[in-house]
Amino acid sequence: MTSLLTHLRDRRLDAAPTRAQSTAFGLSGFPTQLMAQTFSAFAVYFYVSHLAVPAAWVAAALIAHGILNALLNPVIGALSDRIRTPWGRRIPWIGFGIVPLVVGFVLVWMPPELPTGGLIAWFLIVVAVYDIAFVVVVLNISALFPEIFRTTAERARGNVPRQIFAILGMVLGTAGAPLLYDSIGWPGMALVLGAVCLVLLVWSFLGGMVERRVPEAASEAMRFRDQLTYTFANRAFVPYVLGSLFVQTSIAIILAAVPFYVRYSLRAPDGESSLLLGAIFVTAIPSIVLWSAIVRRTNPRTALLWSVAVFGIAVLGYLVPTSVLGAALVGVAVGVGVGGLLQLLEVVLAQIIDEDAGRTGHRREGAYFGVNGFVVRGSVVLQAIVAAVVLTSSGFDAALEDAQPATVDGGIRLMLAVIPLLFTALAWLCFWLYPIRRRDL
Image (cartoon, rainbow, N blue to C red):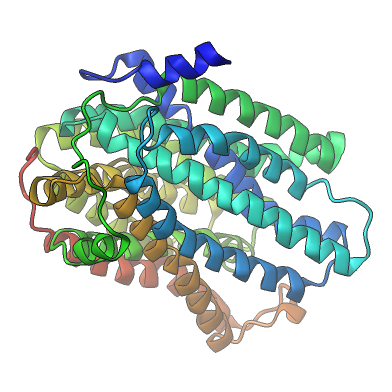
């Protein structure tokens, strides 16, 4: 144990990361997204359908979960920037957070036999542990990205494995979890996924998470109030974070609308939603490599504007199809844009952090990723508002099942195509106002 701590204390990155380090760092995207996707896709279903907890109570608990997550991001980000240890600023957070994160995730699916009130209390407590640990680990991993990879070319290459692993984690969380809980039960699913996530996170931590030998931050940490002041006064960050919010809202609306689109517009079985989502994510994987090459030959702003444009134009195609195959082909085009967004958003944010460090003398990756995480949580609220307004105004009534009025089809297509296009147009305008037009500072 002592030798491991000494190794973690003494290792530092002096030059560009090796390919093995980049791959190990990127591996973290798989377990974090696997846990996040499994939780978001099945937690409500498990507690409401299998444990008979009232849906309203679960919804209230998830609202509390969302508020906690949003508030934790800027606080933990600022604390991470301020703390100085012999092991660095980020490494201790990640190292101490991995086990509570995995344990919290596993316990979500393994409640003891309790009455309804006890199950709600269990859910609140366990999700709070999981949520705090998730923010601690994932935010600090994200904060390491601009430090490990220092040029646009390094970041473009280094982000490829991370985003590809993240997409694979999303796919397994959506498609693999049901296969596991059908065959070995919910506790068995939790233990299998938890063991996989623990092994991969430790592997990534030991092999790819390393800080620079000579930190660029000033020796005196910045006060929390000054952190927020400098962050929101940054002329590059404000249009970036608003654009990021609008992009995330567009994607959230599409993911929420697809099941309705498949059932009520395309008149196909519910299970075929996976074909539409699969078309997006499978296409996004090679697209990440494409956009990596584009940003290395242009600059982050130009590449991001192109990817947003491709995404926005592609989503409009959902107005046309009358079959699952046609909608899946539209999803292929959407996936090209999604790949660009996954690849480029963090590259642009890293550039903002570089520019801020030049002005303030502080490297504040934690603050920027934390505030960004706080703001983009608003996409969940905006998505819920859009879905509620569109479905209500179009006359949707769940009690009618498949016999919905004709206006529902138009409303769903509006929600899947036109409204995401409007949010994407706002995002494009924000990124057009982004002032940093060089590839490297």
